[in-house]
Structures are given as C-alpha cells and as structure tokens.
Length: 597
Image 1 (cartoon, rainbow, N blue to C red):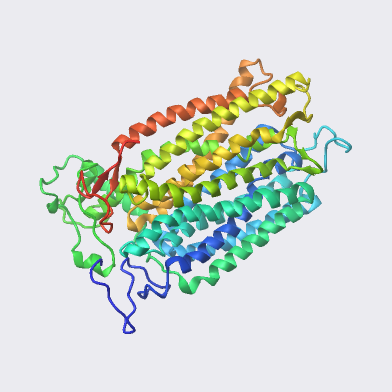
Image 2 (cartoon, helix red, strand yellow; image 1 turned 30 degrees about the vertical axis):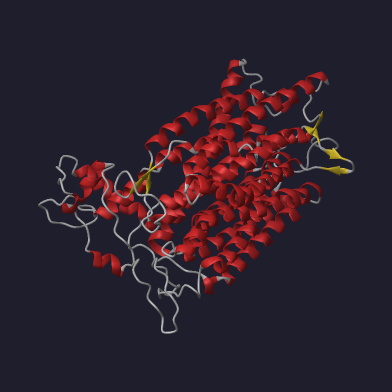
C-alpha cells in the first residue's frame, strides 16, 4: 500500500491511504482532497457552530426567564442536554464505521439536526408553547406559574432531536476533514498536523458570532429571531458541505464495526485466559498480507503490552476462525490502541466539567452585575465571546510562533507532544478556578457592602468585566487542551477506528457535562442539608450563594486530576507512525515512549 505510487493514464498520482470516491473508485491526489476539499468542511463548521452555540450559549437564560426554572434545575437541564449531545457521537461513529460510512451518516444526521432546529424555533415562537411572562410589572411577579408538561415536552423534544442529529454529525465531520490528507505523502502529512488547529479556529469563529451577535439579538430583539437565525445558519452549513461533495476523499467502511471487533477480542481473551501464549508472536493468528493489500490497509505488528489480550489470537485445537473464537493480531492491536487511551479519556472528564460552567454559572453570575456601558447593555452570555477571541488568538500564535520555535528545540513535528500540550491546558484550568473563586468572593463582598445579599434580582454595583479573566483564560486553556484532545484521540486510534477515536473527544465533553450536573446537584443538596434545609452553596439568589467555595472545590479537584495525569503520562506509550520517518522509533516495537510532562 505504501509502495511506489500508481499512475493514471493521464499521469495523476493515486492516493496511497485507501481513500476512494463515493462509488469506491480509487482517487487521484490532484483531483480530490487536500485543503481545497477541507475548505468546504471548515466553512461548514463555522456555520454549524454558529447554529449550535446560538442555542447553547443563552439556553440557561431562556430556561430561567421564559420557562421559569431555578438556578440548579436550569443549569442541570443545560448540562444534561449538552452531555447527551456529546455522548450520542459514539452511536454515530458505530453507524459510520460499520454501515453507512462517514459521509452518508453525516448527511442523514444533518436532516435530523435541521428538523430539530425548526421544531425548537417553533417552540420559542408560539405563545401557547411557553408560560405567560412573569416578573416585575406582570400578573405573576414571583414567577410562580411554571411551564406545563406539554410546553416542556415540545421544547425538550426539539432539544433532544438536536442531540440525535449531533450524534451523527460531530464524530464524522472532523474525521472527514482529516481524511482529506494522505499520511503517506510528505507534504500532506505536514498539512495534516495543522488541520486540527484550523479546525478549532473554525469552531470558535462560528462560536464568536453566536456569542456576540446572536445572544444580543436574543436579549434585545427576541427569541424568535434569535433562534430562527441559527436555523438558517445550519441550513447554509449543510448546503456548503454538500457543494464540496465532488472534492471529498472517502475512507471505506469496515466489514464489521469497531465495537464488535473490540468485543470479539475481549471475549476471546477471557475465554483463553488460561491458555499459554506462544513464545514467538509470529505463531499468533494473522491474515495473509495479500488480504490486507486487497482491502488497501496494513496489518499492525504485535506489541508486548496488554499481553493478556494477545491470547485472543492464540490458535486452539477447535480450528474455528469466527470472530468470537479467534482474533487476528491486527484486531488485538487495534483493541489495545483504543483501550490504552481510556486513562487519558478519564483524565479529561474533570476539565470538561469546568467547561460546562461557561454556559451556566458564569452566565448566571453576569446577570447579577452592572452591564451597562454608555447606552449599551451587554448581554451576560456575550462574555463567552471573549473565550472565543482568546482561543482564536491563542491557536494562531501556537501554530505560527510556538510550534516552529519548539520544533527546532525538540525535533518533534508538533513542537511538543500532544500529552504535554494537554498538560499545559490542565494547569490553566487550575488557575481559572482559583481566579473564578477570588472574583466571586469580591462580588459577594461588594454585594454585602451595598446590602443586596438577600435581594434577588438586584444588581451588584460591580462591572461585569470583573469576570473577564476567567473567560479569557478559558479560551487559552482550550487552545491547549481541547485541540490536543481531538488530535490525540484521532491520531492514536487505528485506521479502521478513526470515527470511534474522534467520538472519544466528544464523549469526554459529554461525560464532563453530566459530571457537572452531578456535582452541582450533590454540592447543593449536601450544603443545604448541613445548613438545616436552608441556604446552601448554590441558590436561586446568587447573592446569597457561596459560588466562591464551589469554585475553590473545583480548583482542588483539578489539582488532584493533574497529579493523576502525570502518572498516566509516565505509563503512556505512543503508537509509532510508520509513515513518518521523522519520528524516532525507540522503546517497544511499534511504539514511542511519551516524554514526562
């Protein structure tokens, strides 16, 4: 597969990574893929992220202002929905890898996504689908009239339809983009190293528009227009992506799903746990090289780590070669590569829970502060735009200045390793929560000095820009942690499981949101119980809450998580990139030892 390139009669060079057109025909490198194809993918992501964050950024305020939900309930509804939206990509990756392929799965899920957006726009537009207005100057000043079951049902049906659609789009769109670069061609291999930086750049460019323009429209003009525009943006993004179809390269589907192959290996290893493995790994079961050549893939060499799994490839006297009786060495090694990433995945749950605060408690804090600048009222959710701006600046500086400088020092094509980049992001998360705790302590002190601790809805005479440092640093942390996380799970996943690897990154964010809901509910319940049923750290009146202690708890949790991360880094061994001759091959066969962060 990686030998001398084949040529078309017209002299064009075929790709060497097994990519095809939609009909399964080999593709010529100059006709498809590369940055010309990726440009459609990146433009799609700008518009789609604008649509997604046009809903997510201000959702907690819609739930409290329009559906009359309290602080804990509204925040948990946001994080539970976000968590579901980020867990469903595991199912989407399974369907893409085993059945429909990435492109077809993406297109089908996009239709579901768009239908959900249309239903959501209807839910916020029709008066019969939301309770009457409440608050000062209305017939319900205390907001005691809650949304009915029908109103909540329609609204959350729309939200969770979006979650289903996202399950098919998110694990596949970034993978489709990365598939446009052939790792066997030196120039495209270098371009691929920058793809994920520009991928995150496009995400946050769309997010910036949502966090500034769309949240202002929702706050000042109305929810109908504010939700209709993201719906139109999603429709545009799908149209843009579809227009690039003639330029895309496609990876063929696997004859069996990634999860099925992994399950077969684990079942076989358990069944043969008492079988003695051969001293020579060449005696383990493997297909002939010709079979891999026909599938335009490569076998993986045996490695000694996770030796218990290698027993799945031990031949026994039964002679059966079914997937539940005997696995190949390549299937075993693919399973090892996916399982060894799990400790890294678990490490990312805590910082993902920190990210959930941006759309929930950070925004709720902003509603209590002075937001007027001259004649202009700043929407609380618009501070998320500073996360975006700092992220955009950090990604560009990282890619154009930091990487070339570190590349000369470390001889690593990425400048520093992916886990080192993630480690820098974890350190920044500790700083963020320390700063957030100190800022909240100052906000409460000002509220106490002005006698508004017990006054719900009364503004604290302190500028909303006091929250700016925690938003800006969150963007810088994303430039390190989130970009490295996506690239790490894609890069370290075997070729036939790239979509599943990408879904790990989405799963990280999803579990992080569920973890945020769990921590918020648990801390609220425990601290309220210790207060005799009154008070607690998180109340509907934030001026009477103790978010400073809650954020300090997060800082301690991040410190403990960082220590575990250091231990994981000491043990983690990278997959050796056989196609990349610049990476030093050392340590275990087919592996590269991770430097200590």
